[in-house]
Structures are given as structure tokens and as C-alpha cells.
Length: 341
Ligand code: TXA
Ligand code: MG
Image (cartoon, rainbow, N blue to C red; front, side):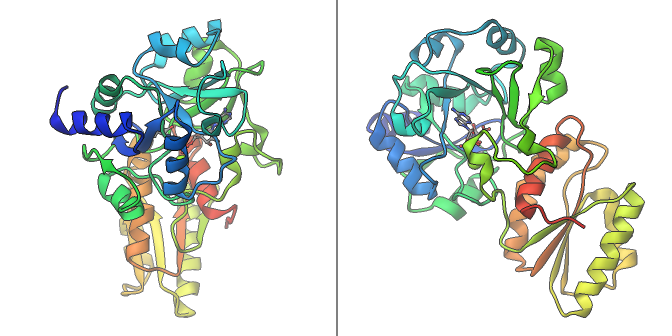
């Protein structure tokens, strides 16, 4: 793809600037991974803490030797099965990329994205690109160019706009430097899918109910968060959950609060029937429970919408944690800072 916008973006990257581009998960903010100055610009534009390492994006597996000495057998199997795609592998680095890109760690996070624009850009600039999600640190990741502009306008050299991204939540981060391999961040490729290819995989204990420090530096921050405090509402089944959410919503409305409700198309009618219609209730529908991929795709956009409607509190329905549901719930739990009903 030799679109003039790609050529221009590639030229900016080669001159050390940072550019936002679409991937199949979320928009990334790319910079030359071999340039400390470019990497500094990424951290500055995002307001990202410097101890949080970046994922390095490659065009093709043939470039792995730029970043690592050895590609373990498990990595080869996973690359064959899922790559290009929403999977990031943590491998032992060869120390060549800018040290600030890995926050001084000896390991390196590698991802080969599966989006035609990302691929064209990587091929055109010929550089490994350090690229975190293109949001201000702490905000929901961007799934449209509009989200990127809302967060980073005036702070970056350019944006490639290719409309909405597909998966909607970030890649799965899998640490292959430990045995058995460990999922540090659930994402576009599920634990079940990975285990089918390489056998047993563990989940970073910090992703469960235990209170322990996560191994992936970025996972310790409150993240993915809309402006208003968000509470996750759970229940033994969907009906119980919705009844519980409606009771809490009515209580907050009586206190004079503006509330946001995050549900799916299946829940719209229920809340319309159970909560008195009012300008102080904003209901957002996020895909369909019957298709968790649709929930993942819309999640960040719907969380951002609550900022425009200026609600005081958001009540979000919990989702099952199977397949991509694990990534959805991980992001909601982070957005909630652990608050649950
Ligand atoms: O889908 C994605 O992965 C998107 C698109 C743009 O590719 N990128 C993304 O990057 O989500 P970011 O920076 O928002 O998240 C990277 C995560 C962070 O949690 C970071 O701490 C972790 O990967 N990470 C990066 N390098 C690591 C390393 N060497 N060891 C452990 N965790 C690492
Ligand atoms: Mg991010």
C-alpha cells in the first residue's frame, strides 16, 4: 500500500517523530524503537510513567532477530498459529533497542499486528516501532481516530485514520521467559486458544482476586478509566444482576446523581421498564451478550461516551470471563479500581 499518507507517516517516523496508527486491537502511538529521543516523545505525549515498558511492533517474523537472540519453540508455535494478530510475546531481549522503550528490563515485548494500515506503515518505514496505545495514560484506549484526537491533539506529529479498529481491546501479553508461560494481560487471543497450541499457561496471580503486584508494569496503574467513578455490578445470573443494578440506580437518582448504565442490547428494555425515564439517566448499549466480541469492540467507545454525558457515576454490568470476556472484565475491573456491587 503506497498511499501518500502512509509515505508521509513513514517519513515522520524515520525523522524521529511519533505518529498514531490503527492496529486490529486499538490505535497505537508509534516511534522508532531504536531511538531514545523518539521513545521519550511517546512517553511525553501520553504522560506515561517511565517504568512502564512499550510493545515493539514488527512487520514480519523475519525481523525478530533485530530484537532477540533466540526464538524459543513455544514462540514459533504461537507465531505460526496467531501471528500476525493480537498476541504480544515477552522474550529475552538482545539489548539493541532504546533502553527507555523497555523501561530498563532485559526482556522485550514483541507484536506483529494484523491491520493493513499498520502493516503498510511498518513495511514502509522499515523500523521496529515502539507503540503503546495512543491514549493519554489512564484513559480508555482509542478505537477510533477521534479518540486519539481527543487525547493527543497537538502532542503528536500525525494520525493515520482508518476508522474503527476491529478487536477493540488490546493484545494478549504472554510472558515466555517463565515456565510455564504466563499471561500478564488478557486480550485478543484467549488463554484457551493459547493452551490449545502450547499446553499449560498460567495467569498472573494479580489478575485474579488475590492482592499481589502484577508482573507487567503497566497493569499496576488505574487504567481504561472514564472520568466518573465506575462500579461493576455482578449477580448469580443476568436477571439478578440487572435487578441489583436497577435498585442501585434508583437509589442514586433519589440522591440527585446523574448516572450512566453500561449494558448490552439485551438489557435496554429492562432498564427502560425498571428505571423512571429521566434526563439524569444515560444508558449505553455495548454490543450483545450473545457475542462478547461485539462487547470488546465497543467497550472503550462506550466508556468514553460517558465523559460527554457528564455522569456522576457509572454502573456497569459484569460479563462472563470466558474467551475474550476475560479481557473485557480485566479492563472493567481496572476502570472500576476494584469497586464492585
Ligand atoms: O494491542 C496492543 O497491544 C496495543 C496496540 C497499539 O498494539 N498496544 C498496547 O500497548 O496496548 P500498551 O503500552 O498500552 O500496553 C503494553 C503492556 C503494558 O501493560 C506493559 O507493562 C506490558 O505490555 N509490557 C511491555 N513490555 C513488557 C515487558 N518487557 N515485560 C512485561 N510487560 C511488558
Ligand atoms: Mg495502554
